[in-house]
Image 1 (cartoon, rainbow, N blue to C red):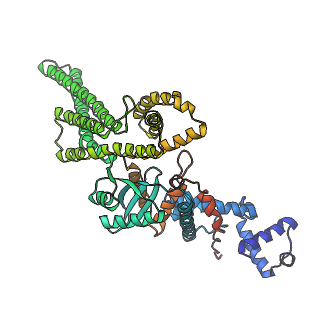
Image 2 (image 1 turned 90 degrees about the horizontal axis):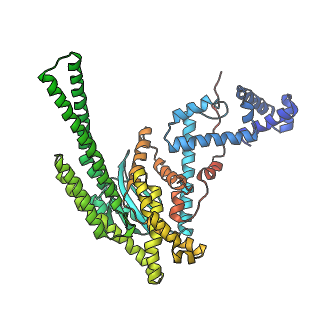
Length: 523
């Protein structure tokens, strides 16, 4: 019987029968008198706060364990709060008489919690591989630099992290080794890879997995933005400052009642500065409109009328927007950035190739189903546009682009609902069609911004620590996959394996049977 079990029994007898002698308590509990004496002394030391009686009950001890683990789980593991701060938090709650709250004790509980999380996630992953529906992976690959360099690979449709591994370098061989090992364990294949066009990552896709290597649209737009955005912002700021100086100078001349030729020149200068501010105020929204149109162009549907478009059409429209941006830069004498322009232009055909690649996958599915021409047309022209608009409209953060997407696909939604074939389908069959359409829509992944966000999170967590414990990256991966919940309540692992998993915190909590005892201080 443990220390706390003995203490709870002593406390229970004291509550039931009031104050008793050591001999009576020893006879009723079956403990020696010396044990009873030590336990009563410890009980008296812990009863210094009004709420202390709560922790001396069985329910109180269980809730105290939950409180400790629930504090360490989100703050210590998910948010990177240090053990010194957590120790201070427990002490300020006056729990140091009931729990081991020293940094060493807190670190020990964290290690036990880490081990349990990693083991639980590994078991669930094996179970998901055996019983789940693992599909082809649409991967985003990148590297981040923490205490050591880490290779990060994510499945974009589900958001599940496949690889977060420490590597000595980021060449083709380490990437191929870690991703191959992971794919073998999952029994999955790679459909295509989205990357920032590093040579090793292009080689990984085209030679290693013989799949499409997709440029990252996020980096492409960022290359344009960092070329021109700062220049436009800087010139607008300079024009506003020059206008403010000119107006202040004119105001000073009026205050001193000085006229003549100098005042007239200051008036002309203010008008010229105001015209410059007006010019650059108009340039900025025009430039942003071109960037927005560039983003709205790379879709399998033309947003003007929600009709199917090909990669050739997309390439032509992308080139037109890039040329419009370059013409805007030339009119206003922006600094020439030939390397960035060349880099962006080279990526446009590869970006547009994703459109034909996506439609080829849809056509292949429809051919396997052996559908008639009428049903194929319904699926491509009615079902997919309506599902695509709803999905991407919900995932677009920019309010202006969100409104344009919804406006573009409103007619498709109406046409789908009133189509004769839609009304003929029973509800179960219609839901199956929508499930297929959602899978096809999620297969259109044009950016690796989710991996960039993950890299930012890892960088912040690295900053919060004084060196990373060896097992902490594995814990972060497990927490992301099995405890990172979307708005619909699903986790990345549930979406990846196509099946649900129990709550991770509720699963690991019973494995932390008892928190450490408080330190026994003398005097």
